[in-house]
Image 1 (cartoon, rainbow, N blue to C red):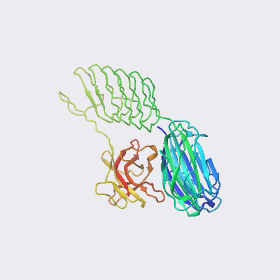
Image 2 (spheres, rainbow, N blue to C red; image 1 turned 135 degrees about the horizontal axis):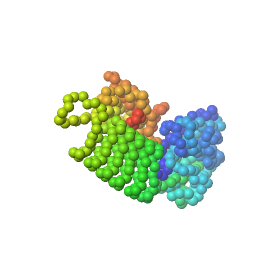
Image 3 (tube, rainbow, N blue to C red; image 1 turned 30 degrees about the vertical axis):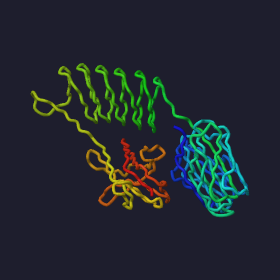
Image 4 (spheres, rainbow, N blue to C red; image 1 turned 90 degrees about the vertical axis):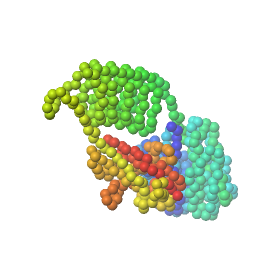
Length: 466
């Protein structure tokens, strides 16, 4: 998978002399993520702790591009410090799945001081390293009043447009992305209404790798949890070991003579056509149904408790030995054994906001100006009896309609209890402190509960931001 922008946000302030805290709405980065800061101000900006200065120019304004690779332990907040309490704007962009900064060819800047105009000066990178580079660019404006309506060159999408002040002390910015780009040099530009006296532009590119297709003889070992679907065409003699829990389904066509050992708990169904002479050992608990057609000479050993029903076609000459005492009368009779099924079931009710706003069976409606909890009633059962789920981790994701959430889309939620004892899974959404910031539109609404050993994931409805 190529590099993508997983989150972005902007900040405008004039109190940076003692340091201004910029809190990332998406939280702390994953290991391997890059956080990029475009900053321009009516004064000088210091390099934030943990970041590297990639390019800058200080003339009639100070303009900078900072970047940081997450190696673990980074927080969700960065402090931006200016040399006085002057106007400053910052755009934060998080890049996921990049392999590195495309340096030095992918870094460029251009500037025009005291030269009134409504577009950025010409800029060009060198030849980029890959055909799937991700390129970020920022037009940085100073000495301007209310610039608006940014128009970027082909392929670029505007992400953020922060601004503060008016006239000679004003600071405004337009930040955009293009992906994929390369290997040809990139020359982005942006224009706007209301001319600016000082016009800068800065560019930074990130390298990435394309997806790959395996051949039939390649070996695949799922020794760790996989957070993406692995699709692999296999030859009939290849071996696959499921030594750890797989978080996605693994589909594998098997030949009749291949051996499969279920030595660990498998959280997805394994469907396998078997030959009459194959040996299957169920030495551990199997969490899904195993249906097996048997030949009359095959031996079956039930060495452990099975948590699902076993269906076994038997010939009249097959032998079954019950080593435990059977209570009841002896004689000619039909013996029927019924094994129960322990259950851990989850159910989710009708989604809503904590204010009770719904849309008559349609999406839940939330104003883009509001910060509110979006809630889903949740019920959990063990052996048919209700249990308290509030010790489990609850997460929610809001994706493009029809799309499944990726690993970076989940936001930590919390639990609440409604009158009558109903448990409510909830997540704070909106521009207020701690809220998940969403743009205008309709989103698929997902809920994930981390229990032991189950991890239910459900699409519970839709959320519309208006």
